[in-house]
Amino acid sequence: MTGDSAQWIRRFRPAPDAAVRLVCLPHAGGSAGFYLPVATALSPLVDVLAVQYPGRQDRLRDPLIDNIADLADAVTTALLPWLDRPFALFGHSMGASLGFEVALRLAGAGTPPAHLFVSARRPPSRFRDEQLHLGDDEALIAELSRLAGTDSNILGDEELLRMVLPAIRNDYHAAETYRHADAPPLAGPITVLTGDADPRTSLDDAAAWRPYTTGAFEVLVYPGGHFYLVENSARVVEALSSRLRAGVRS
Image (cartoon, rainbow, N blue to C red):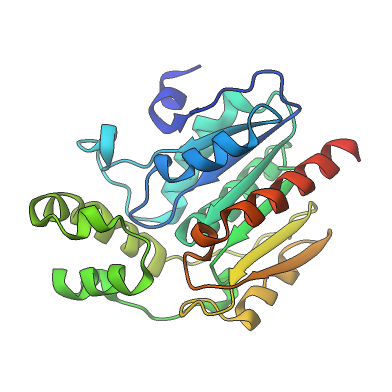
């Protein structure tokens, strides 16, 4: 494994004999550890890799990357040593936009993902002029609380919260300023997962991912908000598992 891969990729439950890999990309402010339960649930049938962005946990002092394009370039490079078998990408929220851009880069290089899973995120065509990254800390903290995706221990620890806020604000900048340049649609299947009460992604937004692939497309709706996947973890894992197994058989 190259230095770039060691820096970016976490493999919590190695499954060296698995027929397929799943690369998981966190939400804004999230870390690779968010996907530890997914890795545990899918091993040993699926080899789960989780991406660790700069500016958090063991990468706290690494320089931040404040735009999706550069982040996608870095993640794509880090994944190159791991493309020795079929792989899929799963991204939640900001990670969905990032996963789509990584998928485009890998497809352009002749190594397309077998499946792209996008979660709780509208497609690039549904750009909105959002500027939370320009607001004060209190506005950002209020949004984190509203979406209920940040560890309550962090929100309740003033010193820790102030330590991680720069990375969170940086991620919001990347997500809110993201623009997608025109590119051919993917050929592989896209599955969109979303919560039926997500304040940031409507069901219409979820369906609007359809033009981004010439392959199979589906939308899976679960009860819950922006972090529906936490309370529906077993159902989400089963959805991933069944589609990854079907992709390997086909």
